[in-house]
Length: 293
Image (cartoon, rainbow, N blue to C red; front, side):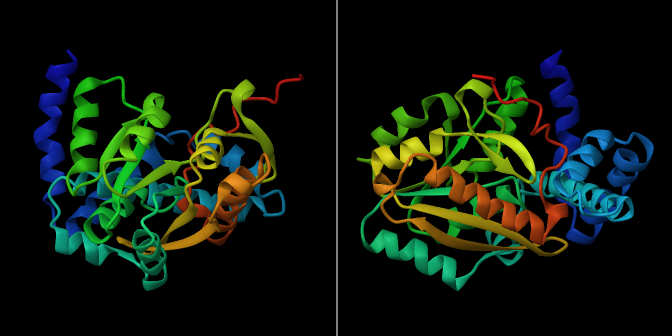
C-alpha cells in the first residue's frame, strides 16, 4: 500500500515542481486555504506555542503572526518540491549566500579546516543546503533523520542530494564524521532545534520556556575542535532568501560545558524575534518537561 499511494502521488508532485513560480505560489495560496482556513492544521499547537513564547504580545498580534506563519509553511512545503526540477541558475537567484558568509566559509577552506554549521528550522533550510553545495568548496554533509516511509524517504534524499549535498543519518553522526576527515574538507550541518529525549538534553530557557536542546552538536564540536558557524536563512520576500553566517567558536575544544549550546540557541532566538513567522511553530517543541533529577 505504501508503494501504491506513493506512485499515485508522484506525478502530481512532479507537476507541482515544474510550475513557474507565479503559478507555484498561486497553488501555495490554495494549499493555505485548506490547511489554515478549512482544516486548521495544528492551529491550537501553533497558537499555544506563540502565547508562551511572546507573553508580551496581544492576542491580535499573535493571530497575525500565526496567519503569516501558515503562509510561510505552505510556501516552504511547495518550495521543497520545487527542488526536484529547479535549475542551478534559478536556485542561486532565489537563495543567495552573502559575500560576508562566503568569506567565512572560504577562509576556513583556505586554512584547510573542517567546519560545523549549526542552524534552525528557520527560513528555507532546504534551499540553503542547495546553494551552499553549488557555490562553496567544502563538501556539505547534512545530519538528517530518515523517514519511516521508505518511498518518500528516497524522494527526500534525492531532492537533498541533487546538487551535491551528502546526508548522514543521525544515528551515524560521529562515526561518519570521523570517517569523513580523510575524504577532503567537509562542512557538516546540524539542524539543532529538534526535540531530544529529556534525560539526554541540555536544558535552558529558550523563547521564554524551559527547553531541552540537543547536546550532541556541542560534544562533537568540542571533541573534533571544528569551528562552529551559525548560519541563518533570512526570508527577503516571497521565494527569495539570504544566507548569512557568524563564527561562534573558532576552537570549541576550549569552551566550557553548555557554552556552545547556549550560544547557537541564543542566536536562533534572535532570528526568531526578528522574523517570528519564519520558524517552525507547528513543531511540538515543548512537549517534554525537565526531569526532576
